[in-house]
Image 1 (cartoon, rainbow, N blue to C red):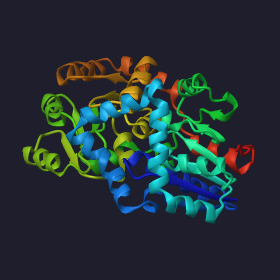
Image 2 (image 1 turned 135 degrees about the vertical axis):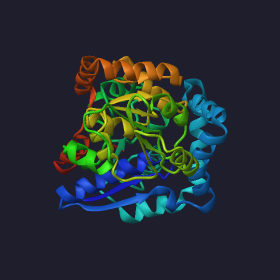
Image 3 (image 1 turned 180 degrees about the horizontal axis):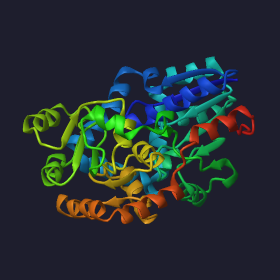
Image 4 (image 1 turned 180 degrees about the vertical axis):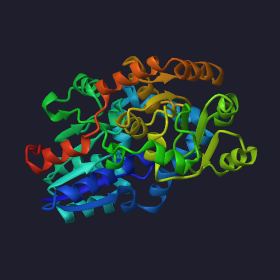
Amino acid sequence: MKIIIAYASCGTGHRRAAEAIYNYFKENCHSCDLEIIDALQKTNFIFKKLYSYGYPFLVNHALWLWHFAFWLTSIKAFRPFTKILIYIVNRLNAKNLSGFLIQEKPDCIISTHFFPSEIATYLKRIKNLNSKVVNVITDFGIHPFWILGGTDMYIVASDVSKEQLILEGVQGNSIKDFGIPIDSKFLKRYEKNILCKKFEIKPDKFTLLITTGSFGIGRIEEIVDSLYKEVQILVVCAHNKILYTRLKKRNYPNVRVFGFIDNMQELMAVSDIIITKPGGLTIAESLAMDLLPIFITAIPGQETENAKILTKKSIGINIKDAASLKDIVLDFRDHPDKLKNMKEKINELKRPFAVKELCNVICQGSIRATC
């Protein structure tokens, strides 16, 4: 079976989910001919740059415009217009991607972003492609761009996500709430004492992990300043070099500062709570490691929807200011039973074996193509 796993490099979550799928299939489905692609690399230069850099630019410099665009494209009354616009834009800019898919003729296309899904389902509708198309939705909320005729299966984060798709008219038997695919390293159990020694922190002290995505945005300095005397803090600045430099210069006691890392699972393993933006992948990884998330700096749109869904499930807490955050963190520190009760609820929502279940469905051939 020939399988193409496609993502779009506009935010790290889509890529991380695609890589998790690719790596698991490679290790466990030896009969599959696998290829992973960044769909944007098969578009023209201008489109690729606008798509890749447009999102981070808007998030960092024009958040109101991103919020407006997300709202506009979510409103049902505007969908005919937005879908026509997307259709025209994609037809003009994705000819190379279309040609690639037609030439490769994969048996299955697994997509972690709606852009390659839109191209694939369009080619199916005009009879230029006969592949099975699987949409892996990497958030708990469902944006309308994911809902595409010709999709054979939707992999969603939770039962709430499934209900949203059904309300949009998607057949329930084509929806699997396997969860968001995550790397297998988040499923392992780590020796806390060894890792604490590695990070030079105390294993018996309450530990806070702060990470706000690849942008390193938010009022992180204010949070660290309000809590460093009370708890141990691990801060991941990612690509925000200015934040990294400023925190390192302050040389806070009980604080460890990191730049861009590839061992987030180790930091999660030694932490009691994670303070984070509510990105779909980070939430799924945190829940897999039984780590309670507290949400800050949610980007309007999918992230605010993620936070809304989880807080409604009593899994995670949505915070708007550093003062209330301090009170909540210290309350959990001083009342471990409260934290334990919150963590028990995580088991109701977490779906740590999404990739395994997806692999079983694909390899057993229980998915039928629709045209």
